[in-house]
Length: 124
Image (cartoon, rainbow, N blue to C red; front, side, top):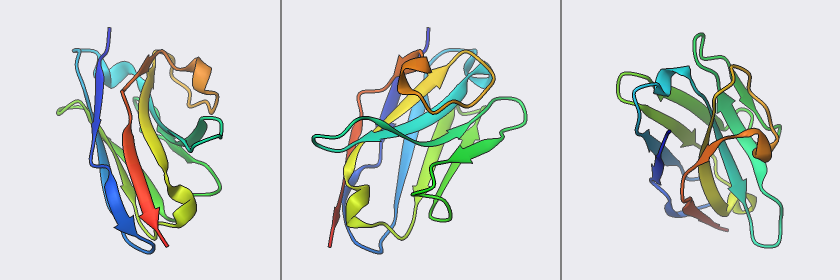
């Protein structure tokens, strides 16, 4: 069982930066692939970034490549999402997710555990 708690959301102007953090409970955090998803009003939940356990391979949605960076600290049971050059279209609720399998996937229903979400609002 893994419990996830996100933090770091807020209001920022376009072009600014935010850093989201996800704190995970459970001793086996290092064996989970972690992902960040987001959901804007009226839209489906979409994959943003993922990082696998072991070699920490990363994957990003095309819309955030070069602007967002995902990282993990297995000793602290945390996964972070550094978001730079934010745009108004990045406005959404951001969710941290974990899956017990070793590969990064973009389908939200392939993840086993979810946080409660944190709001990110980018003003233009």
